[in-house]
Length: 218
Image 1 (tube, rainbow, N blue to C red):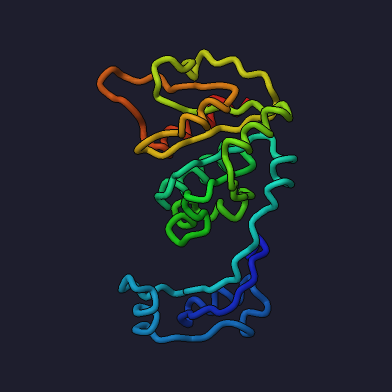
Image 2 (cartoon, one colour; image 1 turned 120 degrees about the horizontal axis):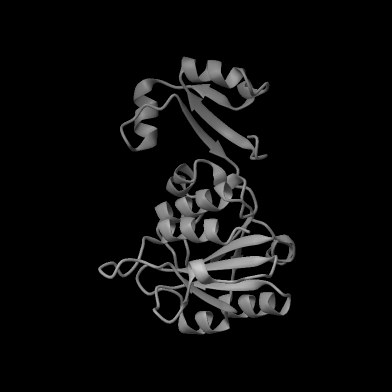
């Protein structure tokens, strides 16, 4: 509600209704008392949550507008796991990155599980879908944005040694299975890697995003 999302209906217990009354003056307009059995069945998880809410989905940001105004952005390409999407969103928010871009195959930041994992931060990090990642990267390069591909490849620059001076930056993360596509990698202005022990070939994409967002935030 603080993010401006409009409630449609809320099923709640008496305890939940009392909590709603403390911050939602017009809660009676859309809230309904429901039995514990009904609330348990509605979740599909067997858990009778005190408050179960349905909101109108907010519109994503305009791609052109977000691309023109962000200072630190993360782009995910073919990252379909909602847990990873939620974790990346939370990492970005915590470390001061102010935009999320997703290709058409990546998960939904507002999917239930992604939203839970993000601890609600998906409402505070604006996001937009990118229909053609390679072309999008090329357009940002032309605008002076540093486009930074994260890869485990041995020939990439170690993250600790990277010297990126552009004030605007886009960090690109690929799927855990295949990484970024070759054409996307080739379009980026920088390729960086997180140095790891010899017996480990990669990190979970969400963990890698936290390290890279921290190292590249300034």
